[in-house]
Length: 353
Image 1 (cartoon, rainbow, N blue to C red):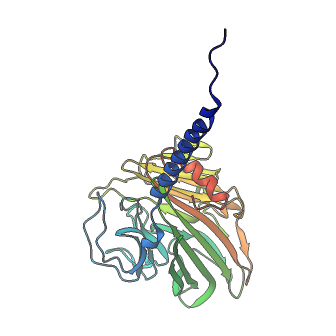
Image 2 (cartoon, rainbow, N blue to C red):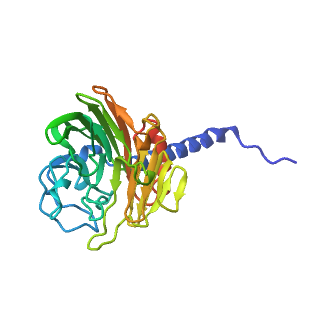
């Protein structure tokens, strides 16, 4: 015996309810997505870093530095580009440097990078330099002091703009040999995306064009580590000799690392220290030498370095530019909570996140 059948007049009501539920769910997902994104139009450029930083666990406010340009997202600092010469008090003048990023900040405004640390005075925030450079028949380095000297110097701003997508900074630098001869033109493009609930993407492109002759770049031969190129140096713990990223969780596309790693190829690598201080560097598949070997360390400090061109070296021909493109991903939580893996997939797919 069968039960009574549903009247046909009930069917339109049923589908109306289903359609309404679908609309509500879609609207909720849309609102969550919008809420997860900060409006990029809130960004601004501020000469010097004279506005007090926001967020907990920050060092005391200091006098503004000259030769710096800071990108803000609302009232929070994102990063400072250092275009003027800097030298920490009491440090040998040979270590004077410019043309790098420091500080780089977490989503909550905490400083992530270190400049002129006592253990490695030549480390400065997020920088790009090479331990072994041969140019004009001389062996030198812009990684650390050398003779003859080789340093990046600021030339001019090419563009500073805020769009609906984010803030773009383009700067022209020169590589100067012995403080007298320009041997390469360097163009650096930094694009800061709006933040989500999980992290913020910062795209960096470094274009190097030798002038007047070839330049050979090579990674450090010391213990066959091969380091050189874009490098992140993690911040020291405020008010102590400790390091924020000492003992930090290290994760790569191949999985977690239990100890420092040198020479292994990865697509991305990540450091996470308690307090929502997570940072990853992504490398595009079309990057020269991909996948490149890495130096990833948490033993004495946090270090991330996709090593290009590594121990093999590379000859840059005069007038022929080479482009090195990366994404810096600053995030909350560890690599899993910060959705680092998904963010890398979005990067290589050409998306913002």
